[in-house]
Length: 83
Image: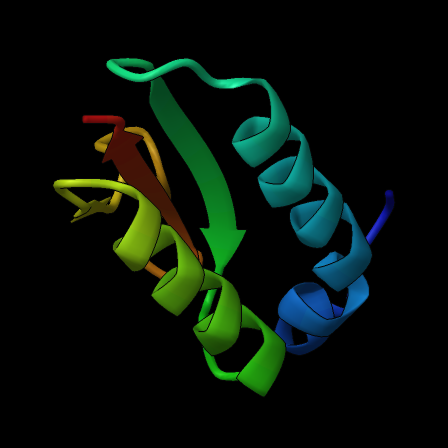
């Protein structure tokens, strides 16, 4: 998906993709598995709801801004190791 010039709307434009990624991960991961999810911001209610669901499904959550990400970029990675 091309969001060039729409940086402030990345979270909204990628919401369906993120929802599908979370659904697929929850349907396929085994106990002890891990999920790395790339998100751009977390302001929308849907994103907050998904993070809450993942918080309930995984023992530990880490929010990380990749070293290679530009400082102005809203990119963050979320790591969810399964218990």
